[in-house]
Length: 255
Image (tube, rainbow, N blue to C red):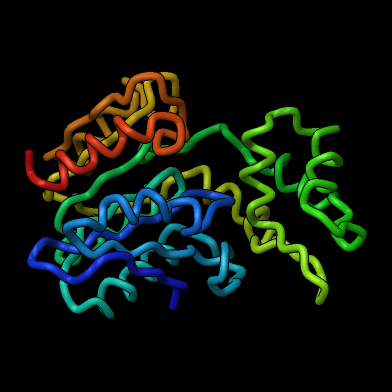
């Protein structure tokens, strides 16, 4: 099963499962999870080929949804699910295929569509980093800076680089992610729809959810609401944390 970390105590309120995006891990969502766990139990997972979870050649959304199904089944009751980016797509497939396992669905800055945002170039950058020669993560940052100018993106990638006396390594299965990139930026053919409440939280400065996506969103998730978080791009939870948390708590409570 996926690596899972749990925050808070079990209450009468439905548990929340948080699903991270591509190149991320549950670690990126710990602060959010702790904040939300004041009145409910919150579970954060590492997706396959990420973090401390298992590696597998298959990184399709169908396989990721099955991983999430196993987690929820082990919790023995339906949950609310919050998924960002790749994790949002996996959560959508989970909800459509297993509507009995999902109460409310919160999707962060992603739509059920195919994108042109191919991340293979970033995989190449990470694979070309001479990690065996590094003794500090700051040294890796200096090398990456030559080909990747975005400070925040470098810091995000380097969270998955382990520097250890026993050998340095990526906590990402870069080969599998690269081979599955067409599937990751796409969205599988699914039959059916999820009739539970679905909230799409989009960043005001992001183009990941646009008007052209609305027909498919309405088809697959007829009870949906789209919320725009001001002054945020694709990394909504990191760029506008306060407003993001206000919205998440509001819609989890049924407001």
